[in-house]
Image (cartoon, rainbow, N blue to C red; front, side, top):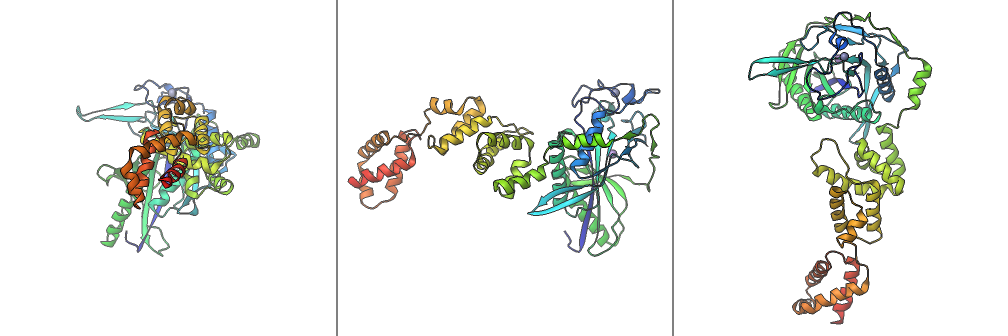
Length: 479
Ligand code: ZN
Ligand code: MN
């Protein structure tokens, strides 16, 4: 990128809330249901149908605000955002503008060892629209209204982000936090976290922000990063050609790796927001707020710092352990059984992460119990199993769910620490390989490696390598 320019990015992130029912009616909030089965007069906006706010959504919006240090408004108001689109049968979306649930706040994150944050403008609650389904072959379009009225929070950041790395780190921190506080599963591939990017560029030192464009349709962190790089370079080359940036909305095409112009943005207020006369303002009492505050779990960012401080984990280690709630909970469970955080962390980072990478699941599924892993580590520490056999046991248990002790015994993988039985094998190998003995006597050090290999092979990996080495030295020196 041209270093004479600075990028400025603000994000608008829509997150679907993980509730049983929709935001203002009793329809199920469910991903993947058959088309138009979760609908009713309220979410379809039929005349006379009256919405009622789902209390759980209010709680989730406030939990999110507390997690990001926002101010919680005592009085919040739902407004109608009016626009026509085929997937919005009401012709307005229930949203919030002047009095959202949460104002301000910040998203903390770490990037290359540096602690940073992105300020928030607000977090408001709104409802989702339906989905258009296009049948290109028959040149027809359909609408699925199941998603109409699904509860969302929209997190609006300040234009504090100045690189694609900062954008992705901000998003990552938002996702980890929302999953940890239990308000959303944030699955980008299912659309439960969607990100719009507002981007402008300016010459370094210019006090005024440039004209911004808005990019939609970003459905992975990687797409966000690529789209930011692409659009920043596009804007810079427009400016370098002496032209002006037009305020437009773009649609990112991740396959082509380029932007497509959707529409040019008319100036300002065309949504005619006004307070929804069907919904009363919501008052958050201090008692209710206190109750939610007391139910907040430790946040991933704080947990990461605690792990680094109390357990002496490196930033990378702490980051990997805390970046996914499944891994974090597994680590915590193991910790209850074995108070050696550094050791547990090593096993999880190398062996559990290796297994997770091998599986092609979107969400990590740890297919070994904490008890089993701790037993395995104990066996290794007590020299009852070699590291290679321990890994093999892990592989078997991952598939079968058996206990590690049983698997190790059944497959004869327990380490042989009995000097007599190791000695038997050593003597046998020496006897069978007179030429190698002669080589060793002649000063060929590699002959020793050969003997170790043969002993390990004959013992099927069970012989304790240290004992093998010791006895080999003794016996070979007798020759
Ligand atoms: Zn409904
Ligand atoms: Mn919105």
